[in-house]
Length: 184
Image 1 (spheres, rainbow, N blue to C red):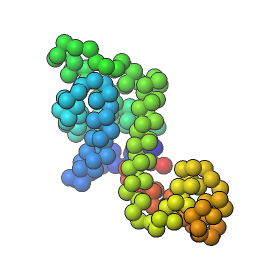
Image 2 (tube, helix red, strand yellow):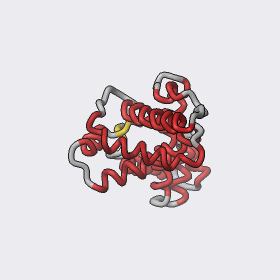
Image 3 (spheres, helix red, strand yellow):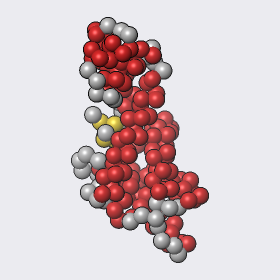
Image 4 (spheres, helix red, strand yellow):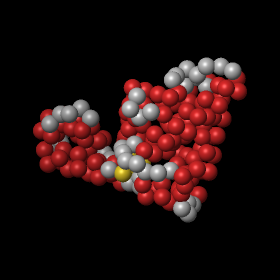
């Protein structure tokens, strides 16, 4: 999942409070997890707040250079703030901070996967309450578990057509949930 270029453009151009609140709500939990894994401990909130301030101040400098550019840029800012945190304490970070910022490193790829999983889980949580339990179950069996529509229909106690519609309706709702936040 790629962060929406349109949304980033609004943040860099003429953002409103909703754009900034959405950025904070979308990325703060992910950044807190990454900061904690980097070993900053109880200072994670402070480090992430500094990262968010830097994003606000520097988003106009962001250059979209292809898939994953925003998250790599964001991780680079995080790595720099974690580096400063440890330098002030004359301590060593818990991870290789150059690898954090490098989308081609093993750690960068792991964090990219976590980014995608985080946004997918966030969208799933937001959408689940919009559907009847049988609809949701049929969707999950088909999309998450990889079961065929007929097997999902039988297990959920619905018709084959209803199972196919469940998958389509939930995927449409998930796209709506992610629209404007991610591209694709």
